[in-house]
Amino acid sequence: MKLTGEALLERVKRSAGLVGFQFRLQVNGFEGYFLRPVATKRGLQNSIDVTCLTNWRNRFVKSFLTEFVAREEGTEIWLAETVFTDNSKILFMIENEKEERIGYMGLAYIDWDKCYGEGDAIVRAQNAPKGLMSASLATLLNWANKRLGLGDIGLRVLSDNPALMFYKKLGFDEIKRIPLKANIMNDMVSWVEDDSLLSSRRYLVYHIWNSYDIKKY
Image (cartoon, rainbow, N blue to C red; front, side, top):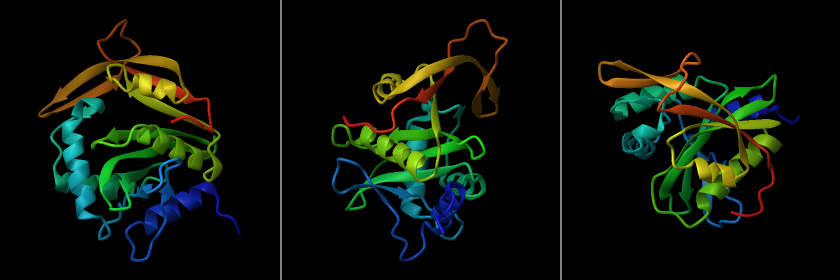
């Protein structure tokens, strides 16, 4: 019996990190490059993944809605208690056949009843062949559409993120901008949507994907 999209996502997440688990998405157009699901369950997490995710989170802190100093212990907790337990979220490492990690990306905000989800946490951390990131994202979103059954796929990007043009070229159309307000607490800055603001120095830009078969990378 064919698995539903929700059941497939859960199986992939729960199996990641197990000995013999071979599920990977071959990046379309890039032989030897893959999307590998990040193991998030306690006891199965990969220490190199945790280190990379922590270091990259700190390097690109301004690209996230929350700004803080990440530590490996906190990353392990986030993977186990936030990503693993959330049936609307999954994270993939981008790597080559030598297991060299280039970056990561994922899916989040999945509404299974509405067949809707979003690309999430898209980070290029190492030098990569030209077009690899766009091909990786297209591969992930096509998998989300064809295998998970997500008919509509969106994306949220900060307005000062240079990647805005990257997403436009990939076929994402802007649908709205929500002003953000900075909340500062101890050593963390949280950017929160606030419709009451007439203007802001930062906005959260919502997009919808209009192309499910990207031929050019």
